[in-house]
Length: 267
Image (cartoon, rainbow, N blue to C red; front, side):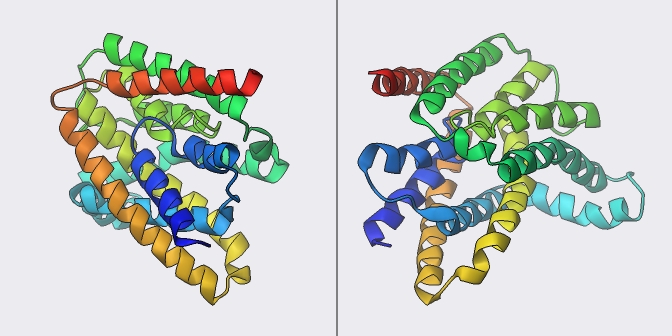
C-alpha cells in the first residue's frame, strides 16, 4: 500500500478514535469520497492496535490498577479498587461484543457503511452529545464507578457500532447523563475503549492474519506506529482542553459534517 495512503489512514484513525467525531465514519468516508482503495481489515486491525497502545500509555495508572485487580477478580473477590475496575470494564464491554458479533456474522455491519448513514449519525448524535453535555449534572466521581453505571455506559457504547456514531462520543454522552463531569466522562470512555478495541482486534486479526505476507506486515507496522503517535497527541489535547472548554466545538464539527454528507448523499 502506498505510504501516503497508510499515512492518511493512520492519522485519521489516530486523531478521531478518541475524539467524539467517529473514527470508523471517517475511515469509511476516505475511500468513499476520494476514490482511494479500501485499506482492508488488516490495516484496520493495525491502526486500532496503535490507538490501543496510546490509550494504555496515557492512562497507565488506571490500566495498572485494573491489571493488578484481575487476579483478585479471577479468584472471585471484588474487594479492591483494581478488582472493581476490572469487573466494571468487563461488564461495560459485554453489550458491544454481543452486538458487534451479531452485526459482523450477519453481514449487517457492511450494510451500514454508507455516506447517508454516517451523515445522519454524525448529525443526530452530535445534537445528543450537546444536549447531554449542557444538561448533565456533575454529581459523580469517576473513581467510584458502580456496575449499574458501567452497564448503562456499555449499552450506550453498543450504539457506536453504527458507523458515524463515535464510540467515545456516545459513551461520553452516556456518562454525562449519569452525572459524571467532563474529564471523568472522557476518562471512563477511554478506559472502556481498551477491552473493546482489544476484542475487535482479536476478532478481525484472527480472520486475516493467516493471509498476511511480508509486505502486509510492513504496512501494518507503519500504520500502527503512525496511528499510535497521532492518537496520543489527540488524546492529550482533548483531555487538556476539557479543563477549560466543553464538547461544543466537536458538536459543531459533527453537525457541519453531517449536513454536508447528507447533501452529498441525497444530491
